[in-house]
Each structure stands twice: as C-alpha cells, then as structure tokens.
Length: 86
Image (cartoon, rainbow, N blue to C red; front, top):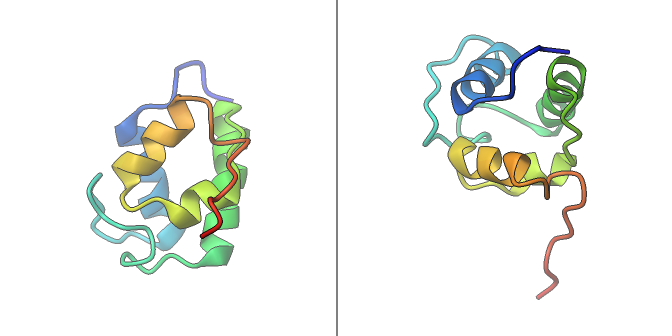
C-alpha cells in the first residue's frame, strides 16, 4: 500500500503499466487503449494492493475515460457500483 493518496497521474501510469506501455492520457478510454476484462481485473487488484482502494471491475469497464474512472474511484462509489438497467 502506498503512503500517499491515489492521484489521477497514478491511475494513468498504472493503466499504462497494466496494458503494457501504451501512451496513455487521462482522457483515453480503457478499451481503446487495448484493455480488456482481464486487464480490468488486474487493474482493480493493483489499485487495492498499492492504494488500499477497493474498486469494482464494472467501474473500470464502464468508465468513458480514465478521468471518469478516477472520479468514480475517489468519490468512494467504486466498490458499490450498480449499473442502471435500461
């Protein structure tokens, strides 16, 4: 676990690490970068291990951008996400 709080830059760097060195910005979409459900699970695990941040994989999968994902995580809704049924 890190001694500092998760920042947007930390999330962007972690996504780049998980996906494999892609050029990543906060406004990128996880799947457009080459992420998949296995990468999403790995990202959720690393967020928990490094920042003690419990994140539901659905937050990673449904976020439009990494910036949106970060907002969901830091606002504390990431571990209790329930997608709307339409």
